[in-house]
Image (cartoon, helix red, strand yellow):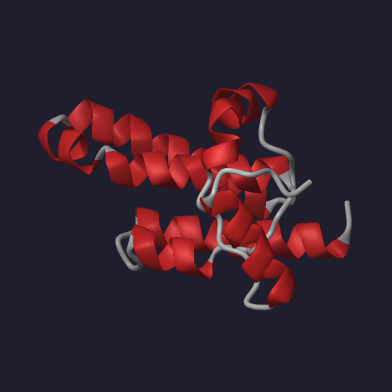
Length: 125
């Protein structure tokens, strides 16, 4: 594993922890998330973060569901902070959504074109 991947995993783990503790909104975490990552563990963690936000209304009504989702997010960020890969079953559970991941791109010319092609549904690879 490269140092960049390890640093990005640690950074993302901290964002997820802050969301879990209510110290950072999901939107803020998404905006600060590592850009243009190809790391499947980080992409899956990003989707888990989106899912966490999407189920906010269910979390408010169902204590058991909230606890399970909190534990799941905690498992993800503790795994990432160790620099480890997420289990393959977690990565696989989000793969069908990878093309739709709204992971932000760097603010440069290359990032602009990646966003442009993604928004008009044309693959850039």
